[in-house]
Amino acid sequence: MKIYDEFHLNNIAVHPEYLRRNIGKELIQHIISRVISHDIMVILLEVSANNILAQKCYKSLGFTITEIRNDYYSKGNDALLYNLDLIKNG
Image (tube, rainbow, N blue to C red; front, side, top):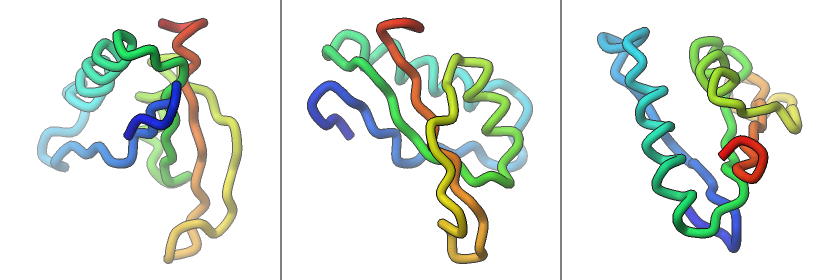
């Protein structure tokens, strides 16, 4: 979802049978390449603090944690808010 010069990535998933094959990373790289040409300056997303694989993927692509939302999810899990500054990392 594009909001002004931001792109909010609301949902991305890889089937459990296909994890650890860089599919998620390739999907995000594709998204990055697509939004750069639309004057997007930052990509924003959230991920569960329990989703270590996704966190490693986002960090490897240059995303940084900007905020933690405690008890954000229904099971009491925290949400980590990430952003990727495309001016610095694009």
